Image 1 (cartoon, rainbow, N blue to C red):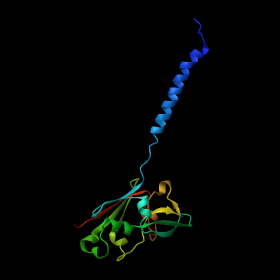
Image 2 (cartoon, one colour):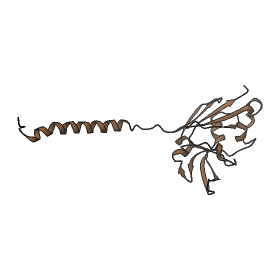
Image 3 (tube, rainbow, N blue to C red):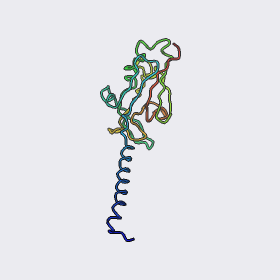
Image 4 (cartoon, rainbow, N blue to C red):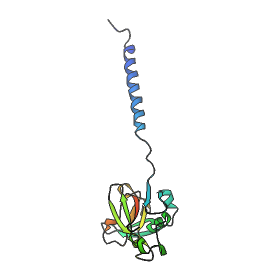
Length: 177
């Protein structure tokens, strides 16, 4: 039996291919869901739990610090002083940082599981007054990839091990209640 028309044989094949392409495009778009905006959470032994977005940090008091990069060049980070964020969460500062509250520490956690500890006294103006920043900019530009979107920057540390990249959580822990 001969086909009546070659076009009539090709038409079902073309419909199948077209359907397959449409399905592939739709499934590809479904996989490209919007990622939620990055947040920084402040939790633990504080009166007010905070969840901050980049827009929230942009409205807070800001400072800039310069630190040497690995190659010796100066890098400028801009962000919010850690003590300012802790104050907004109600962490004890000023005259409230006495007695049992001096046993409090900050556990900074990164997206990749990296963690470091600071005492509240390190960031308090009455004690060590360390200028630790929650940075969101490097050399005037938003932090990129593995750097951010938020990073703790400790300009007075001799080694950069406590400058937490991909910062997600600040947990306040008071040892003595």
